[in-house]
Each structure stands twice: as structure tokens, then as C-alpha cells.
Image (cartoon, rainbow, N blue to C red):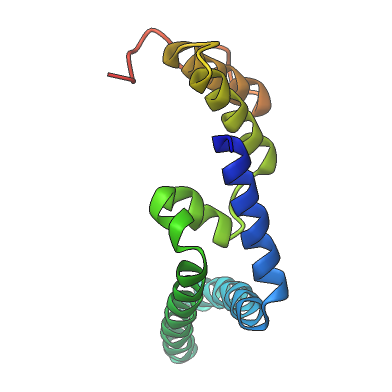
Length: 155
């Protein structure tokens, strides 16, 4: 199995588990709801910074929300870590992004396609890095000289 197939298969398994497993679904939805509530509370705190009584109540509420969010996140990450321990051990950064649905699929595919070309010897590391810089420049409409390709980031 290729690296790309393995990673995309793990992503699909994680996405499916997050939706189909009742506990994972509940925790994930709770995390998202808590995050929204934290954002709303933060906006309220900013709006009432000149009103000490309200500010104090909202600040306490924010502390409680943050603590609840921290506990929910720990429980969710523990559940996902137990279910996908092999993938987490092999690709911890991708695991974190996948379980929190924080990975643009187009970018992931581009990176994996480039990695496959390097892995197969069709391009070298420097060419792969430059392809990634070109992709990022084009995708996000960055100035053509945004990246300095002359620097040796690969050691």
C-alpha cells in the first residue's frame, strides 16, 4: 500500500468514525458548540469591558467554558487516540488535523501527490519543495517572490 493510500484511508476511517460512533459524534459536536460559545462570550466580554459587573460575570463564564472545552477535548482526543493509535504514532500531526477536521483536502492531495513523486524518485526533495511553494503561491494568490527558493530549508 502506498503512503498516499494509507493516509487517505486513515482520513476516511477517522471521518467515518467521527460521524458514525455515537460517543465520538457527541464529543465532536460538543467541542464545536463550545468553541462557538467561547467565541460569542469573548465578543461579549470585549463589548462590555467598561462595565465591571457584567465583565466579571462573563469572565467567570468564559473560564468555565474553557475548562469544559479542555475536558471535552481531552476525552475526544483520548477516544480517537485509542481507536487510531497506529496512525497517531506514525503521523501525529496529520492525526491531530484529521480528528479536528482541520485539513484542506485539496492541499492534502497536493502534498501527497508531491510526496509520492519524491518517494518514486521522479523528483528530488528540492523539486518537491519548490512544487509546494508554487502550489501555495498560486492557491492563495501570493506574490511570485513570496518564497525564497534559493534558501536551503532541507538541510
